[in-house]
Length: 111
Length: 115
Image (cartoon, rainbow over all chains, first blue to last red; front, side):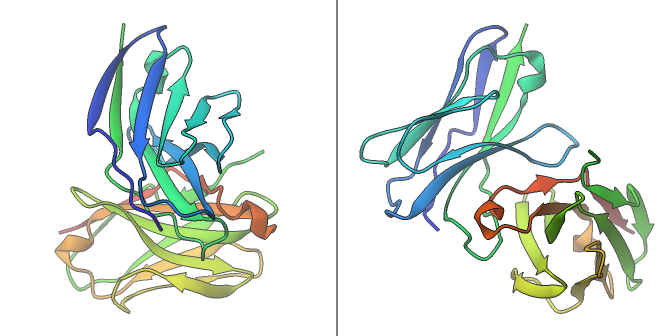
């Protein structure tokens, strides 16, 4: 699976959009980008995933660059409950079960 | 719909003992995954069970083992506990459809403390 690089931390004001970058410059053509988050003392939670097209669901939007070497997770209106560690994971679909979590980005949403 | 449930919430053991952790997947899910989250080491993949069979294993010693029962619930056993086994153990499940294996639903975890 391709390696990802995320900033260790970022702050965001409540009500504003949070834009979380992820670099995956070695991504291959059959690898998807997945985002999970882990709120303190809870298990990780799936957010969204995509291959090359931009994706949106009720939680967030995922913007993948045309060359697929980086992506951005957008939380459109951050709330205090969005404070969590966000993980960007790149992997081939159905690749033997395991998710390879990196260090992620600690996002703190402030009032 | 009930989520992934894990028991116990907390477990305290001493070095050399055995620990058994339990996981009940979401109804209809056949795959169960185990992860270890130790302080400073992040989330590490341990084991994957599907339809009662071990499908994949992370880089952990053999004293970490498990099984999946016919009702798809799972146990993780850790033998000969060491201090560094202290961690949060997370269980996740995913549906029967291989196309959905990548979306894993996690429980709240079992906090294992080895004294």
